[in-house]
Image (tube, rainbow, N blue to C red; front, side, top):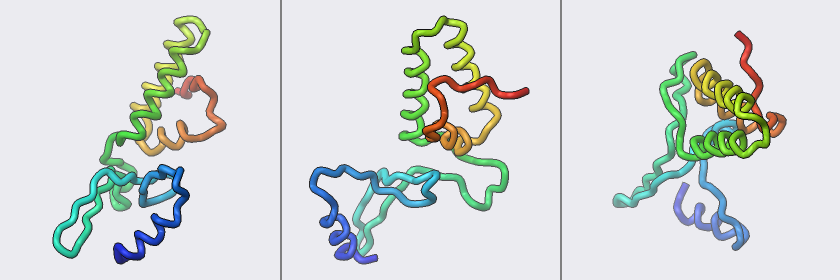
Length: 124
């Protein structure tokens, strides 16, 4: 794509929008983190996503916007009016899920609008 084509798309966006530039799959978008011009090429850098060829092993951690989502979930748990044991159980469930699942699995769960504010205990 030429920059002139990209400019047309960007200019067509509403003035009050502040949309993230992403690529990849809708369920796990990679966000644009840096751009630099080198001669006739505009290099765009995106946060890391798992490689298709990695199989069942996912070789990446969480990226910045995913860390914010996890932080928000912890804040929801801490702000809840429940007792300390219930909060600890909810945080333990998130911790165990982080240990047992891939990062993309966790993000899918956290992005699901049907997920309650408190995660349920994982099955043994």
